[in-house]
Length: 107
Image (cartoon, rainbow, N blue to C red; front, side, top):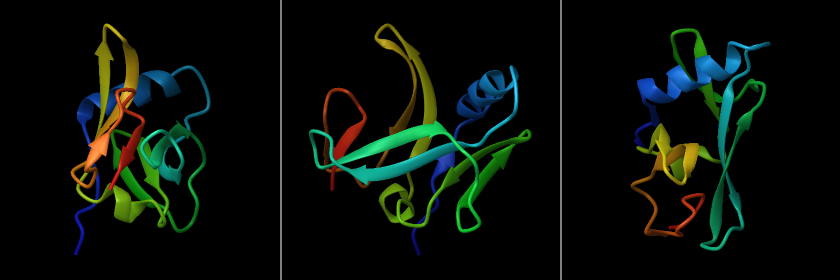
């Protein structure tokens, strides 16, 4: 069985900070075709669907749809605040390569 993705406390803390200013929404992490390496991550605030995997901590939710789940098995969803910018990042053991932007990968 594939391991579900993990979400770091830092990512949940940033989501809580984002949601503090209004109506709390889950963070959706999805995979779609495209990008410079074949697949790309789609990370956005969204509502949870009935068939989503819901990862929850401290009242915050990260949701993954069933189609994206196999591509994110064992991945770690984190938040990075670096010189190039602050963003949610994914450390994906399934990706054989990724591009410099960090949002596109291949399997």
